[in-house]
Image 1 (tube, rainbow, N blue to C red):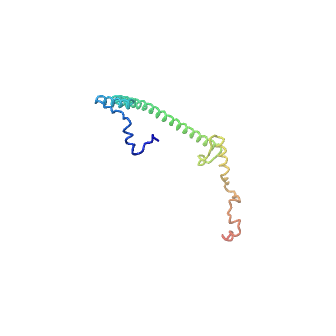
Image 2: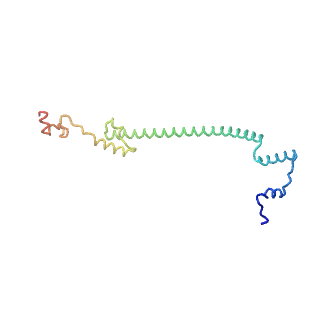
Image 3: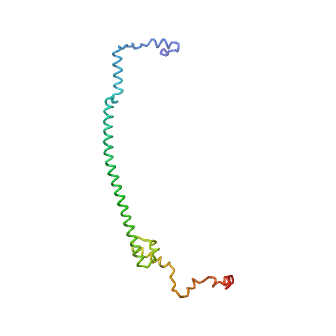
Length: 168
């Protein structure tokens, strides 16, 4: 227990330990140590001159990219415009060909002129089928001087109640 130190003896024990002697530095040594520490800390940071050179190089690169991009973008815009004009011309040609087929098939089948534009289909066969369907749905014209068919007669003639109502 001789190694144990009581709290009252603690300050005396600390003084008994040897303290390293403090060294004093000259102004030149201090300045050199600070400069060395600063250089070590900022060794990867560019100087003002290097930053100016980098900024000038970046500005030149941006200018060249802008010129190049302008030419590329202009060429791309012209190509896109030509492509859209070509698509529009193809669509107009297809629409004109389809209209010509409708007129041709409609005239061959005897479809009335106001109904020719209503014919549907992309080829002659489908347009012809549609023309046949339209013609089948149209009422048949009556021959002048003939009696109308029973379906076209007045419904009041068939119903006794309606005959009495209308006085027939």
